[in-house]
Length: 340
Image (cartoon, rainbow, N blue to C red):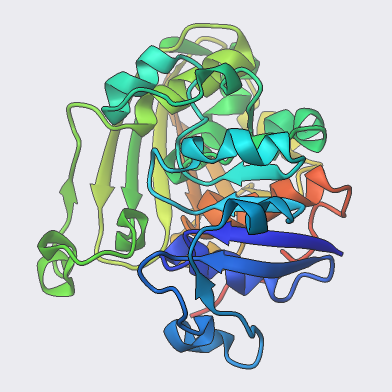
């Protein structure tokens, strides 16, 4: 049984981590931090945990966190990098669910996140936590950078085509939509139900922070430069991401179904559909990524759906934890999606 800490436990991602961890047979949450809610019983903020978790939020204490086997950071960007070096020195392993360790270039990080990186010496060591491409490295990692939600859906959708060199890597389009929980658990006028309901809009059209993450991952995985147009949209639902991806075929006689079936045949959380169209409700609450592929002439169309809080965040983090500590990869993540 490993001892687990969560830094920043009051957001949607922290709540989802707790939901998964309280039922995990090999991990016990022992500390959950929040500066604003210190002393409050966790189950009072999150009633769905009543009878399952007898912990109170506490102030972040480096000494207490260092006694954990693993610490999850479910914090805003720029927070984890201030504490991670000290935790690693004490032998505590870390999974960061924010973006602090996703980008390898500190100058690129500063450009997109507006602050200098506090520990650039750890960027090369940090393992990008997408098990479908980095499973071996994750097993031995001290520090895992949990992928973003959009990058998870987009990368898994495009990867088989780029690995095969079957499409023009300079002409890739990702048209992605997310539910409002992707913006976090905060009070903002533009996220109120009255503002989001009965509406649908694009945002960050001139450039989203997840763009360099997706490009970096695809280029590292395939060894080729890619040109990607990525436009995210906000849709009036709570959970879910749907990414419709477009690429121009070079290998026109390619059997797309066989390609995707072969690539993901042994992946426990990637479900390739040979017919039909995946929808976000079919993965709601699960750690699955569901994918379908079609073509119109020379253009390949890939549909990729995930739950942004599970495979796009907390579930993938638990999947990485399982790999890091030698547990069965699917442990604690076997729950089916909720329907309806």
